[in-house]
Length: 199
Image 1: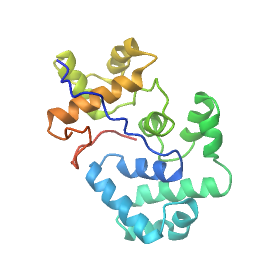
Image 2: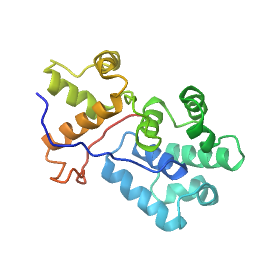
Image 3: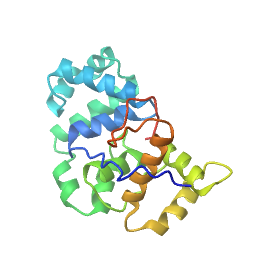
Image 4: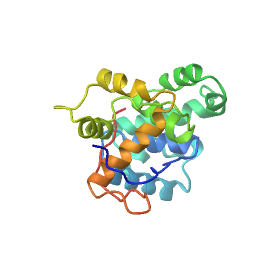
């Protein structure tokens, strides 16, 4: 049964480079850990922008607690934007297919990361995040399934909510967090160790 918690939080993020960096840092780790590392990088760099991340370099990011793989991804993303290989304004203004293809060509941005960017930053209404662990848990509870649904099973269930799957995802995230006492009365996510997604 769905746990009613009122209007689900919007959890919006500003489109752009810093949000993609944050999404990369959030892959396969707790939100608390990712937030701490992002804050450390932002304080050290002055601001999280392509030039500051490129200037830090992979070794500089590593010294701030970023894993070597993610440091490589972050530095590579900065390089692509500085060289004009990737234009995030074109991604936002163009078709979803073209934008997703452009992001998918960037090492470190997999299906989940791209879906989160399209849902939270570009605010598209019909996105179902690929392989999101919290959504799988919420679907299992709401639909009373015996096990966590596979990605294909999630897609089948969520297809009934198209063209508003982003709203359904927000409602299920709110259900998941409220059931674990990680959503306060105002709909704000409390600091937690919740891991939501993949890459």
